[in-house]
Length: 349
Ligand SMILES: [Zn+2]
Ligand SMILES: [Zn+2]
Image (cartoon, rainbow, N blue to C red; front, side):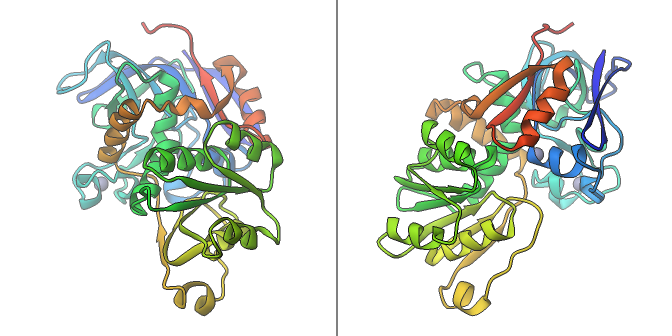
């Protein structure tokens, strides 16, 4: 079968690798969609700068996989051949407190391995997966929807869940990449009637408006804080979610949060730099760091997406077949597109 490797330095290698065989509690999933995440670009594609949970171990890339189970190993208890699944992208030890609460992302056991980082991921014809990381994908949702949920939409849902977003809240989204778009769409589904998006890139602001992910899109410049306050009667937003991962974006998220509001940090990398008293203490802010999601919350999201008739696929702007993975990564790396997906049209075994 074919598998895509990311040796660093913006290289993408398509190689022939052996087809996997499932062991006990494992399934083989014929890949149908595998989306590219900002973390793939930041910590693997450009250069291998991750360590610990972000160390890339020379495996098949792709941590947002979705497809059809084509083989189930012994002792599988829930999923079987023909089931459509999306993958929670980390297999944990299964027995630590974090794993038991579904947050395999936070597992610190040496056996913890993330697809596309420490074990083979979804940029391939087939994926060897732990049954315990499979999430059933109900029929109205597409495989591309499933791939988007595997990391990006799951992470976005966790952020709005942590902030308890409702129709009472104006929501500020700093950074309108795929995760920012997801936050805007999910905040809207939860009832927010004013979602303000900010980005430095004009094409991303336009896309966010076109998709209905935000109600207002503002340029990220020195006037942005005042512009956010102007939109909210001088107060700022009850909830802000930083998806930019930049120092400036985070600062804007904090300063654009209303007194007693909640500010969630999701975008990775860089630093948070604010004057503590005027920015955090006097406005009585709650600042929340939020990393990915739990598999239980991911299952909840899949159910809600069906109920809301909300297809994450909406944020996808570019599709490539597996043998054009290099072009897919180049497009994603330009930072002007929405979500970029690798699709496999070939039906499973
Ligand atoms: Zn990711
Ligand atoms: Zn664990």
